[in-house]
Length: 85
Image 1 (cartoon, rainbow, N blue to C red):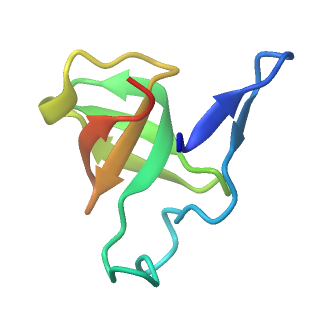
Image 2 (spheres, rainbow, N blue to C red):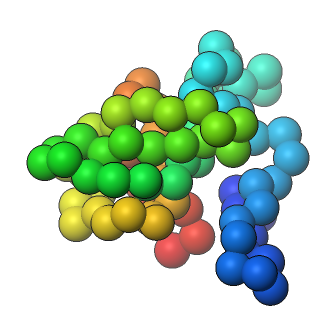
C-alpha cells in the first residue's frame, strides 16, 4: 500500500490511518514513520507537510538529492526513505 495516491486532478490524497507529525506514534508499533511532502529545501533541511497539514523542518541528508514535491518517510525529524519509489 502506498501512503499517497495522485488523483486525476494532480492532487495527492493520503491513505486514511497514516500517522501525522503531531501524533505521538503509531498505535500498532509505538514508532512513527510519517509520510510527508517536501514543500521547500534549505541546505540539508526541508520544510515538509503531513496529511493533516502540519509542517516541520526535516533533515534530508540520508535521502539526497531531494526536491520540492517529493514524498518522504520520516522518523524523529529525519527523512529515512522515499514513499512510492
